[in-house]
Each structure stands twice: as C-alpha cells, then as structure tokens.
Length: 436
Image (cartoon, rainbow, N blue to C red; front, side, top):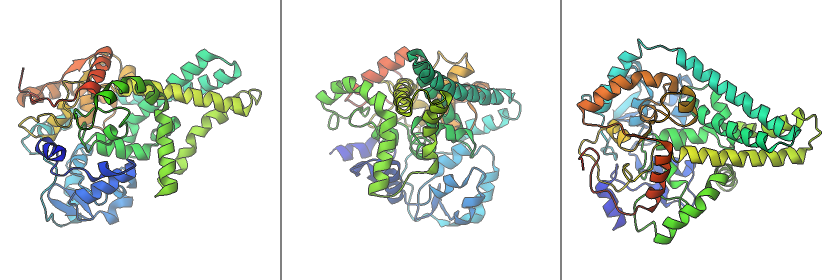
C-alpha cells in the first residue's frame, strides 16, 4: 500500500532497490541504481544507450565521473554538468542504440522547458560576466584551510579551548568550501574535503549524483543516510510519533558523530563487502601530525589525537547545523510523497525542493561557507559560487516565464522549518505553484 501510494506521486516509476539494503552506502546506492535504471549495462542519456568505455580516461572532468556511472541513467547529470553544446555533439559517436525501455524517471528536460531555456540564457550570460570572484573563492578556501592547521596547532601548543573551537569551525568551513570544488573537473582543492573524515569520491556519488539530481526524493541518498535518527519523509508508516519527537533529542548526537559515522560505515563496508576506501582517506591524519610537529612534540601524540577528535566533533556538529538547515527541509518544501506540480521540468523540481538563504547574499564568504545561492548551485553545480550572483537576472526572468518562485528565508527560520519537517507525517496536497 505504501509503495503503491509512492508510485503515484514519486519522481520515478520504480521504488529504488537500494532502500531495501540492510546497510545503505554509496556502493549500495550505485548497485541499486544499476538494477533500476534501464541503462542496459552501459550509460543512458535520454532515450539513447552509449558506450563510453574508451572515453573514461579521456574525459576532461576526470575518469571518476564516467567510470562510476556505468550502468546508470545519467541524463540529468549530463545536462547539468555541461553548459556548452560541445559534449552533446561529441557523444554521438559513442551511441550504440536506442534504449529498449522508457526512462523510469518522470522528470522532463524539454528544449522549450524551464531548465533548457534557463541554461541557454546562462550560457550567454557567462560570456560577459566578471570572472574575478572565482579567484576570490580560491583565496577564501586557501585562507580557511591554513587557518584550520594554525588553530589546530595553537590548541595543543597553548592547551587553548578557544583555539580548539576555532579550529573545529575552520575545519567545518574548509569542508563546506571544498564542496564548491568536487562538483567540477579534478582539482587539488577537492582533496581538502577529506579533512573532515569524509571522502570527496563518496560525496561525488551521494551528493553530486544522488542528492543534486533527485533532492528530497527516495533516490536522494542524503535522506537515507540519516534515517532512522532523522527522517524528513512525511510518511506515517515509516515515521512513528515516538520517532518524530525522539529525533529532536537524538539530533545533537547525530550532528556530533556524523563525520565519524561516515568513515566508520565506509571502513565496515570495505571489510565486509567491497573496498570503497582510497589513499586520500589518510589525509585527515595530517591534522594531528601537524599538531604534534607544530608543538615540537611537547604536547604528546595522544593529546594531539584527543584534540583532533574533539576538533573533528565540533566541525561535524557545525557542518550539520549549517548543512541540514541550509535549504531543503521545511513543510513548504517538496518532499517525497507531496503532490507534484503539473510541469515536470527537472529545473522546476530543483526550485521546488529548495528555500534559499536570503540572509547570505551580501557576502561571498558567507555564501561559500554556508551553502548559499543554493538554487543556482543545484541548477549549475559546476560553476564557482562566486559567479552565481551574476546569474540572478536571467533566473528571475525565466522563473517568471514558467511560473516558478525563488523562495528565501534566514537561518533561524530554516532551523525552525527543519524541525517542523521532522514532525510532519502528512503529504502536502497542494503542488508547488498552485497558490494557497
């Protein structure tokens, strides 16, 4: 009965296989998607089947994106990650046949629809905008990264609680700003994401390929990974009254251990199933090492490790306070089970799953460190955050044309809304754009 109701209002015609896995990981998500996507073991874009095997190592964005998506439908990801017409022309030589079955996803990308229209206007706008803010993003990232190590060393050298807290906040900001980079072609900044015990390769799957493409749906891995501690899907069958209110109590604990759970889950899965660890999973250890060396060994290695773990817990808590209250969870935001708008355009779906942080727009630093300009980032994830403000005129123009709405609120309002969403069990019968 639950699945039947889901089929009527979800973004796909299949209930995702991965959600039936005993342990939900990026690997189980990929495995399930390969079973569900009707990609015939290759790569699917719209209604075509492509064989990119020979192109994996030639991909300008790096081999990871092509290698890890084999066997899946990459239609929306392909459209969102390429802003020029060159890739569309280039892939024609890799097409092997038309797909045997229709796509399982109900979202559309029509040439005259919202997203394609906006994408064309953005492409023209990018030819004229000032590119200097992109350099400013790089400097902000570098400054926060260096601050992380400096405060970490100070916390052990002077046994300073203030320095420890500042180190934790700086680490949190380093991880968030690094997110600006792992959506793009391979670069050195993306590796700094790993300093928070997470891994950019895993997040390229859970965040870029899953959450960014299917936000707030059952195909959004970032919903699954917090369940049952935190459940935002408004479904009374999977969210009991006790669970709803207990989540308010368990929430701070979940925040503080989120980074640790990420790495422990990946280690467990690697030992029990398939290895999903990389050499750069060792990068977080550079922090206690620098702490030890920076204190000339006087602090003691065990003390440095203890301070590092405390610092990471502070960063984890701060990351969740910012990230989980940044854009996606409020009773007014679309979640799986709510009524869909009649226009199934993928870009409008993105807009419907987000309320932006309107209190950040005046500062590029705050936008980078607090997931700001979230709608534009979801629509064009490969663009530097510094370039996004220049795109608002064409976004507003296109939203007006297609009856969309860019909603905004401040962080406190988001936090209140996120807690209300944890309690919500009934689907919204009013589709986005229908009015009150």
